Image 1 (spheres, one colour):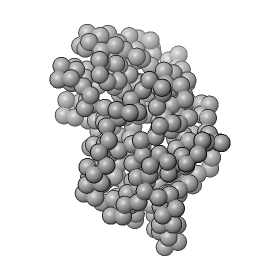
Image 2 (cartoon, one colour):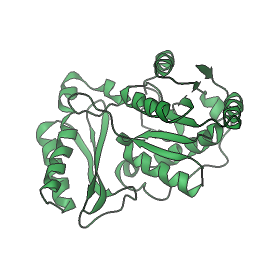
Image 3 (cartoon, one colour):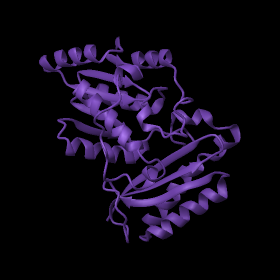
Image 4 (cartoon, one colour):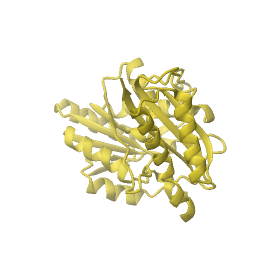
Length: 282
């Protein structure tokens, strides 16, 4: 595995791979790799000649009161996990390397951001879209891999690739879960033992919603109320949102039909957790 911190080196390597006719699978991450990331790496390994992984905790996507400083970091551990999972190129630039001077151009996301996490984290997806635009230009991958745990991010990346004509195939990989259903997340390490016991209620609530839809329920408000009630009954978490939209456009629906997302976010004392399911409804 080649490890590099320099943009120039990364670009040179990627250009060479493309000249050799090799396909490149790219997994952009903020590090502290877990089984969710490993699922992305495995999928990339299956589908490409070269697998490139980036680890970069992007300051642009954190708000002023968010957890940029305490976001978990362990680059040596990440390198080991990457190597064990068939990564060819490990790119871990510094903030100074990625942003050597104040940005004169920044990407602003107009659609798919005024709902879900975008509502309470203004500017977050502008930061995501800006760093991904930079990374896509540096790596120029054949395919880019993202987890459906952050389904709004997948929707935003879908729009970014389409609107900027990146010749990249977006591959969305299903959420990886603990045995009790909790979605794998780097932020799960923040949970107290009591919170960890309660956290699977998010997925259980979503499964209740799925069952109701399978039994014929088509009213979004009824579905949201059901999910909220389940979470309030089974946890001490504060609900940030429970919302239902079309997917990936993230438009409101009067009646459930087509591809929809049911998404939740809650705040425990020490961590904010998100989860979602997508369903195809006829």
